[in-house]
Length: 426
Ligand code: AMP
Ligand code: MG
Image (cartoon, protein in one colour):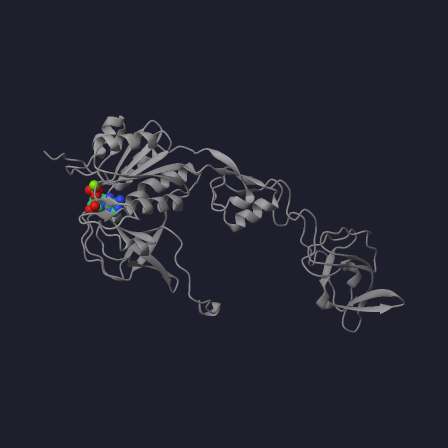
């Protein structure tokens, strides 16, 4: 007799998985190697930026009050008494009538309260002295970047879980983080099951197919921010499968298998979970594709039994594994970004269950649009290369048409442009 499974809603399935979330460990990584990792601690400013009043331009620093009444007919002249470049300190306190030649980034000398850029100053030599004149008035504070005007000491700058992008790195370097405290990447074991599978470098044989899921999942693991270990592909035989799965569970934080979770004669994963003593959280979800997606828990390890069908496998990973991984990476926003997009293609199927359509998004005249990535069948691989989003069509809805709106989950950055268009046209 075929086992009857009770499907649960996607939201409930996500909640069941997330109930087992755990904060991951952390490690220290050299700043040059921390790209795309997640901060394991918030970053607080340990000193103000700038730490001293400085000049934003190459020019002259002087007392603004000295320029009172300056005009083209009545220029005000200063004697240039000092010359400071960025990184050098001013020597003397400026007196009335004196100016310091100052470069971008250099500290404002005591006594000066403004800067005029070179373009506004005329320089000339007389009696072996350098002079500078201005023809307009200047106000105190003009062209000075004040101490702590950008960042105050003690300010909370970044929260834990932030992904380290080039700008984050700049801030880390600014505050002297040679070693950066980052979330340790969880280790995700990847196993493909199916007697029909051939490895990527094996020649095709009748009745067999190449194992594409293992490589796809490994890439999804990496995209989610974790690391993977591939334990190979297993035939649909209980004993050899148990052996490898036992070994994997000695090493990994999370184990992802594909195939064998359905109710077919050779679907062994249910028996494997039973033999492992794992607690199956669910084994049927009211969604398409990926209704057979199974998640089980053993101790503090999570086991994902994804469908062997490539598109179903892909969707199952994104919905249920990615947020858990992101949470382990201290992310405060572990779920996919989502928003409303306008369909550019018809989607003629009705949707008895929540459907996650492999799609790609584009921005057209400031509107997010979404197109089908290819054939909408759970067993296809051909739509996956073009998939950058999952379009969510709620259960109980009918066919969608071009022009309708739907929610999309964004899986990655969209492709770029072929040329840099004039920004006026944007
Ligand atoms: P299963 O979930 O084991 O019933 O497999 C469902 C379908 O997915 C079958 O047609 C399998 O041949 C196919 N399949 C299973 N594993 C993989 C894999 N690793 N790569 C590509 N296709 C697979
Ligand atoms: Mg199978």
